[in-house]
Length: 319
Image 1 (tube, rainbow, N blue to C red):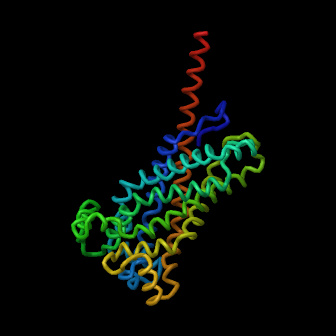
Image 2: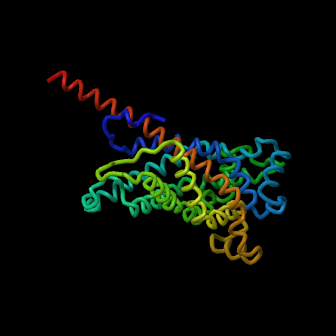
Image 3: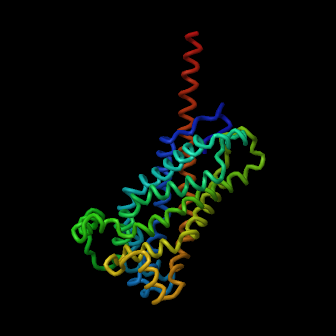
């Protein structure tokens, strides 16, 4: 970690820096969490779930039949897009925070602090989720289609999968599951809210006028991991419906139809199937995301401060 004590002043938090840091954080989280995601998707699938006795059995069976690389099926799709998606999430979140503060500047004056209020954090997180769902829906559709391939390979990769989806039903077919995807992405509200709450709880002596708090690596990991678990639990049912709609797009008429038919055939427990691997994945994946995001942001801010100090030094020399 960068030594924050060496920074002479607080830098301005730039949306572009947040965008870049989100990109790095997204790749870190994907590398850690994708095997868990593959297990989760297979347990949620109506066709594949019956083959496995549980989370561990699904994991072991996949490795035995398809080698360890089988757990990384469909990773090419999110690997290409997840960096951009996380960059979009963190960039949109930062922009929405600034937008709200600009419209409600009285709150900043009243509390005499540059830290956003938790209400703004929650709303900005949900807003970022809605924006991101426009990208994640087709990306998740391709990923789910590829993850549910077992021994027979009918699609060669993400591009081939998208081409076949488009050929089957046009552009609308590439956005199957848009409503449950958008509902799932609203979890970014609880996500950022939980992270901010825990970070501030770890900084009880936070002074008024502070623009940020500085935490050590373990605290960032705890806050990020906990935020991931809370976020997933808050909208998990929507993820189950999304997976089912995207796995068999021709079977369901839409979001509501999938809920009704799934409940009638398998009961309420279906909406929590795959939750165990999701929680197991959520902590390390989101801890890695926030750790990488924070480290990259500090690196950007250090560069920003160094550049600013150089400019001040040059001005002093001129004077």
